[in-house]
Length: 153
Image (cartoon, rainbow, N blue to C red; front, side, top):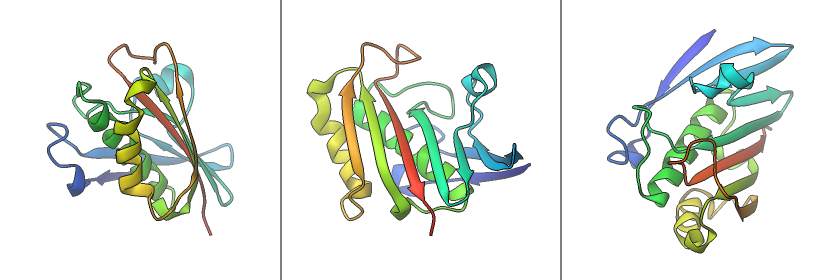
């Protein structure tokens, strides 16, 4: 098992401790990444999986290292994308290799807040993306969940 502790200085101030711990492990012939989420072992999934040159990142909520959520949707989106970036990098990929994102929000009327944050990271990359409203996410305080796919060249 390999562990990486990643800090994202551009996100300082969003959460009390903005560090992200990602561990990687080979499972079933694939490289997997774990963020230590309480749901990963319970549901039997990985934060991200690399198979060949493909990286798939599971739905990621913007929960802080302390297990709490910011009440601000934009801050949750930033945190979610920071976790996604850390998982992709732990598996040998880069953010500019993301080809698709999917965003699930509990209030689509706030889409512009999410779009601004997404654009901060992806304006030059321009992956395919989707944003849809869902009634509720796995935790009632979560306002957004983001998935990503990357192809590592």
